[in-house]
Amino acid sequence: MKLAKFVFHTLLGWSIKGQFSKDIPKTVVVVAPHTSWHDFYIGILARKVVNIPIHYVAKKELFDSPFGWYFRWMGGEPIDRTSSQNKVQQIVNIFKSKQEFRLAITPEGTRKKVKTWKSGFYHIAHTAQVPITSVAFDYATKTVSISKPFYTTGNYDKDLKHIKSFYSGVVGKIPEYT
Image (cartoon, rainbow, N blue to C red; front, side, top):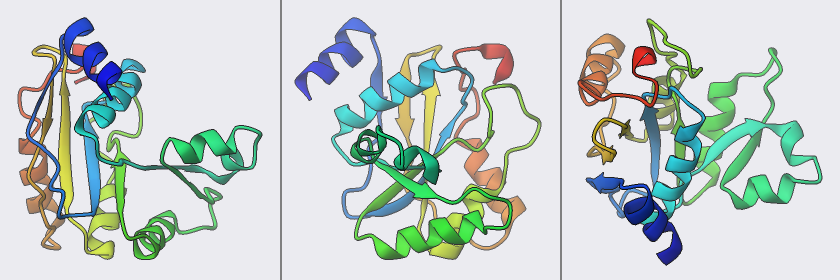
């Protein structure tokens, strides 16, 4: 952890504003904006600095490979991504089966500029009855900001407006994709 803090704070010049609530072991972590592959290592370092497990889901085939142990060690959980499978329900089932699960999701679904976010993160949180914790990677200020947990109300449009307001003014690594 000391090495991660040194690299994150001293070498790269990033800071963290806010914190994860340690008494909330399950949450959907909405990470945005996602504009570059650089977000991956910033996220890995930030996860180590805050010293709290953050997970992700990936296609099950990755976990059947010789590197499956690595994907699990990094916090991964396999899901069946074939079109006949309900991915939201699979992830809700993972939430139900775990004592602790913080699922990182990028709502854009790509690193390119998008007009609308994918809604899966919302439906996962609402169905699993877990809060959403927003996390912003602001490259302009080199700050990772962490929101307080937000519980969905079932009013998607109203809730999305509230969630997106956290990201107002945040600049991604590639600003034109923000």
